[in-house]
Image 1 (cartoon, one colour):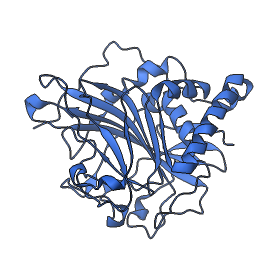
Image 2 (cartoon, one colour; image 1 turned 45 degrees about the vertical axis):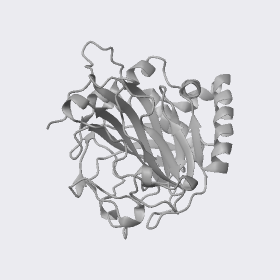
Image 3 (cartoon, rainbow, N blue to C red; image 1 turned 180 degrees about the horizontal axis):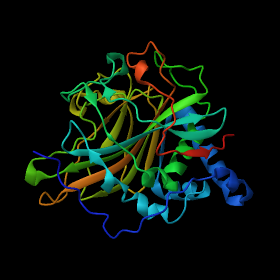
Image 4 (tube, rainbow, N blue to C red; image 1 turned 90 degrees about the vertical axis):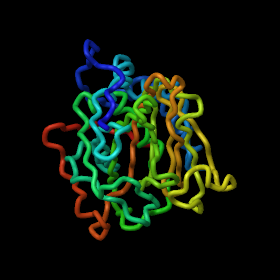
Length: 327
């Protein structure tokens, strides 16, 4: 069975010219300092719990304060139309991009596409169910990375996680002043008519292998109210366990992305997570859910199992270099 057709087309939809956000220009606006104060208050909460959930209505104001353009907000709700097929899951389409966030030079730059993703190591707390050892996704286009909402989301995350100590992962370079940010635009689909069931987290309880994970809802349609609920579990929970087999006493958080730009940030090595399946409110129609997922971690050392695939070479055809402001 092939990948289901996308729910809607971008034909005739207004497109925005890619733009590089310069947050330093915002330093002359009072709104910028009000925004920074809001983000610092959220960061204080993150320092205490290593979990942060921000409602979309609050995120809109924050992202505008960081410089996101008004015209880019409706456009980001359509960018998942350009996602490409997932090589292993028929209910999912994906595009991906890699960026380097450098706290010393204070800039974000687009990195070249890495080699196909290899299966994660067992110590990364992820149980694979797909048959292949490697995955390769279509690259995010200039239209996606040139959307100032996407760029402002990366800036927001950089502010929240800056100098936040986390449990270190093995074979990552914590002496580095650089972060590797992998940005995935993911569409999950359920179509009961075709026997297609969308699973946001096929592997059950898992860890994403990053230091800080951010998930952002871009849009959804026909999604039942009990769908795609995210549970954060204590690390003592069994990797790969389905939600119904987990210990309720080990649940440390429960959130649900329901509205545009609802945003979750958490320290990935402090928790494991599980996301319930996507169910259609109307089984006679397709259901879909669009997310932006940003994994941020320190660079891999050479002795890492797939460290040899890591590259800091800048992207030749889709360059991006934007400044960041850090406190």
